[in-house]
Length: 253
Ligand code: 13P
Image 1: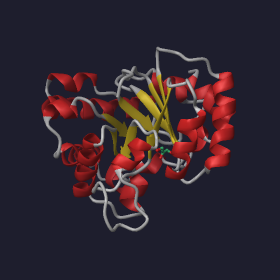
Image 2: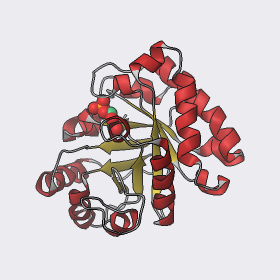
Image 3: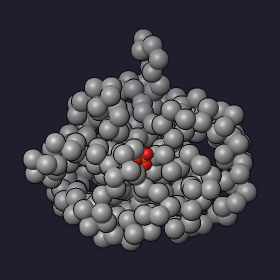
Image 4: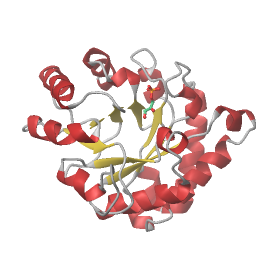
């Protein structure tokens, strides 16, 4: 990947919304109203079928980056319904979400899968964005730090320290995703500091520069306070990224 990643990283996870037609219409309006900026990095994670249409209609606006929401652990094979990292790369992705909470908790993805998916992403030239986060019962039991540390260690286990320095991490507390219940900037910072400390031991010196994004019910009203919080290097936005007006408000924060 040629363009450097400049924090804050503002990432839209469209989940299973915006097929090719809607995705292209979104991008056309977004590009018309958002001038390129080199003080931040904007990434869209559309559904896999919308990746290539977006890459083609993006034309010379390489400042708006694309990512895939999930990749298979293998590069090819008899895996009906799956998309591999090299295919996503070919379709225009620079980034790959790995271990999103919906993959973990709806589709049963395990730590060992996240490790192999990070490996597959790096092998294909994609930057993994490893998602970590605790469920409400784990938070209530005081297990937040232990959960995110476990997910971080497991997800990065297949990478060398030098490769680990090139990833992004997203902290998304499961109880804040799609619920309207956002972590306070203080709560986000507290867990981001735990992640930062663990990155220092897993990555070494390079760990200090790994952007740690916050995700979970981010909207135009709370984005500025979250982005200003200590150790928050970006935002991973679901629902509020689906509407151009709202997304413009967040990327302009
Ligand atoms: P919401 O912003 O809709 O809570 O989703 C967050 C998320 O899961 C982004 O990956």
